[in-house]
Image 1: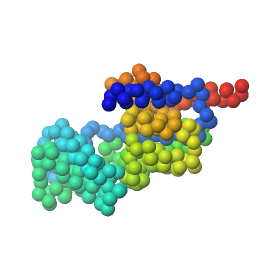
Image 2: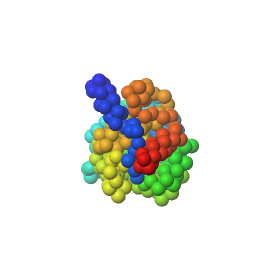
Image 3: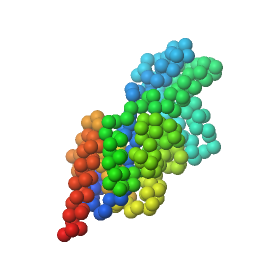
Image 4: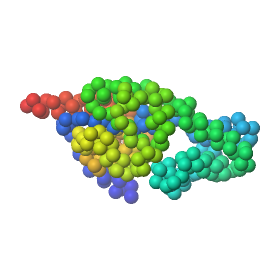
Length: 276
């Protein structure tokens, strides 16, 4: 499987660094890990919510491990935050939170759990657990100033669109033009259909006139490239996955400011080719 991924990555990377771009019209950007990030781990907030309700909590690391198991299980059973089944999103998260504590070794009675859950659900429906990267707003504004349509594409639910991004200073109309959120559209990365929806929202621009930027080889780069979109990766933490991708020829940069320079250089080559 790893060898197949590497071969696919090399083939797509070869097509991902053209001498010049066709006239670029749209840029789509992943959210978490690219524009914003969590402050700490989810387990930290779960334990703090339990302690605020006056009940014990497992150690933070074990709680975070429990969250990853519970979240993955729910995401596999009910993808896209329940959007494909008749389940209120608050119940989707209620199951994740309850099972996270169970995986961590703690079980609370219903009254106590309701107190803990309300704190956690409210917390993650606000901007409190997140930070915005310093280069996020300048990059998005630069792209729009170039006349590009800017979209955000995220495996997230409606609160990212309605609360979290605006509260962090990333507003529709000033930083981005449209959003595609898995919990709303019913498809999630790496399903190429979420990128097809993005192209439709961008007035039907062609894939080769679109650049997607994200932090995941599997969820961002490969599906975008499979549709013929240009793509690059942001590697803020110098991971081994990104190092391997870079060695295979994938454009990988530590910051969005570097991505901006890369895209600008390709655009200049494109314009020069047209003049010739």
